[in-house]
Image 1 (cartoon, rainbow, N blue to C red):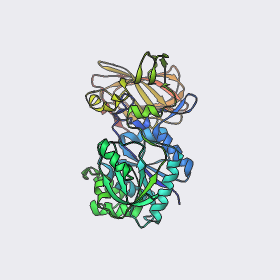
Image 2: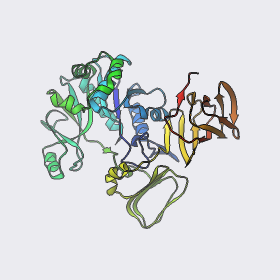
Image 3: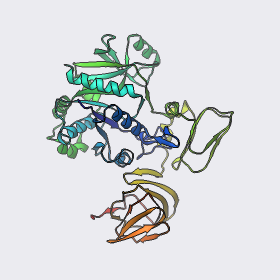
Image 4: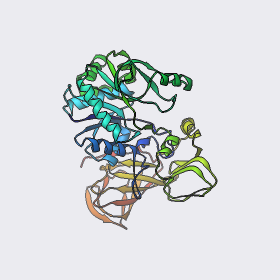
Length: 438
């Protein structure tokens, strides 16, 4: 049977600042080398690995509206997306995804569904184990089958699953919350497993639980009511009240890429982007998205990350404690991936903003206008077409297009198209946008 898999794609993007932000969470950072000069992100890596194990897999990404453009940019238009209108924790997100599979994708209530985070660093054996987990969920009398990761150290970051025995598949004896390291050692002696948030069930089981806890008729109704739902995790809403639970052991490689410290462990090279490290550096990693060189000398156990959002220079262990400092930073989004390409802010002045826009071949912006700013486009590379106030024209490198406030406009790329966009106005805001039908 095909693999139905729901990837939970959340995150505020703060622990991997400055490469991540409110619209670009950690799973979209291209940091894993695939060939000379080319890199892929966590979500691209996981998606590719799933399809290499099962080309027929039904992949659905449960995510917020702010991540949809980046997902389409990196994975294309064919991947299924269950869009959360707002954040309501994992139970509402999974309930919405299950209703999406049942009502939109027409998946049978008898079919198994696997749920897992979008951002673990794993190898092919993990996805083969997900297939096994799916098959077990279909055949077992248990309503939930969890994947328990065999711990490699006494971590205080994860909850623990205590199985009844040491078999590959066992009934669950109990769950334990995140412990301190000494308690974690005691759990490990009892054969405890990390709870990595990976589990499987028959679709009808969670759909039924969702109807018991939420008053809704179908996917569209649940989507409409989503903002009114109570924030609650899947563990609290379902797992803690279920007695028929099994756990399947997984002993392969599994890493949570949640911090700069753990992320750099998975980097194949010591640097990405323009970087020079002297031979006096030891265990230093650089990720540089700026078009200027970074020089490191005499450093040890340090991570350097540079982007238009800012620059981080940190001891690797200390980088785990970045979040409260980033919370204090009030920075405009300087880079974002969209379904049509990407943009990078070049300069901000009083009354103007300059942006470099890259459109992928065959893609274009929505037809829109702004009430409080004029815009000027200068095409610097490629060929495409503009539509300004209903008039279409071909454009190529060197062409300049001016749009006054209130005039609807769009640009479409026939080849890779790069444009310098200058916004001029006293109140430049992302909210100043009106969409037009065309």
